Length: 235
Length: 314
Image 1 (cartoon, rainbow over the protein chains, first blue to last red):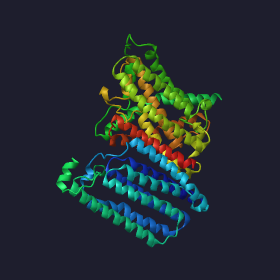
Image 2: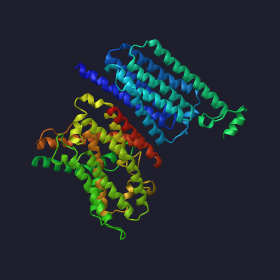
Image 3: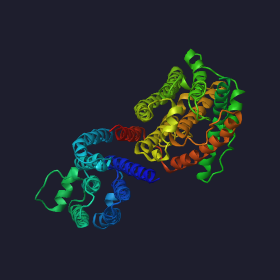
């Protein structure tokens, strides 16, 4: 009976990992900032679910705390902060211009995910069987895909989400290989993330106010001119 | 031996008889969701009856392909219905004649001839639809392949009767990530191959926007009836593969008696009804994609299938 339940937890955790990977692909490919943000919320929920399931599976109450911290900070506070700080206009725009077209970006993302599996082999073979599992490769894949999002997206909010996704990926690997990390570190990381969101949100607002756009692709050069002149030059 | 042959024929008869009903129920449900009354669920039968009693007009400039295609389109899903589990969870007479890949190839034969026939008539809209169908087809095929390869990797076989037990014994296997991701990918494939809403609008009447429908524009009378019936059966067969092999292999007959097999018919119809409810929700809440966004939709399906594969293989 116990074995069956443990097996169920393992499978559900693997399922959360699979869906985590899908949301990471989605963040690379979604055209709208709002969709990106929603996918990020789902991803953070999956991260919390994975922490909870690993906690149940290996009986580590500490991981429940991690799940709780994640549940409060990312799906609730991050969207709220972003809504409050960055301009609403970003969320209503339909299409965002990207450095690569979407199918190409997806194929490269796929190659990165497979690369993550190869990168995880040495890590997985260094730890005992309890710590192996889908969390290590998929966390690394989340990290790589977050970095990839940073390179292909050209809009402030999705860039920020790419950054946060890198953190999610690192956490996703972290919860499976270090089960007794002091909670204070995770709290610190979560607060740190929130501060990053706050600062970038305010910065985005300032940029939007001065330049009139947050499309990073159009902000290729820095000019020491007054804001209206720059606005005209941009258009 | 003779018994499994009989059951196999019953299976084919179920697909033949109930596939228009599934189409009718789907149309009705869709209209109800949109607060309209909709046609009777038996409307597809009446359409087929009417079409079979009408004269057929064939263009003088068309070749034998145009005349043969309705029969091929009609027969192909019947063939596939022999190979897949519709009513039973044990292999039937023809079960080992072909695997899921074989069934996929046989189904695509029907699509191939329908495409040729659309080009054959020199109707300007036919080739547009035909080339679009090919575009959807060649984007969907790699996904099909990866789904089948992953399935065969898990089950050690591509015979659907063997695959169907794999995900539910023990039941915790149901939640394996590769299983759920494959289900998602296959659902997207059904939407694409069936010409359903995010890819194509089956109820649209605007020729320039058609993908699947425009291939049968030139048919009339009996040819049209066979094309339509073939389309209903193809959709029914895809649903059976999705439900009985991948999603929920429950409610199938496990005893080799006629009673058990007949009892499985209402159960599979109930499963299909539940699936159609979900399907209608998907179709009603999405808008049709622009043509060049279809590549992104099927790209998403491809990514999902490959994610399932790498999670299974590594």
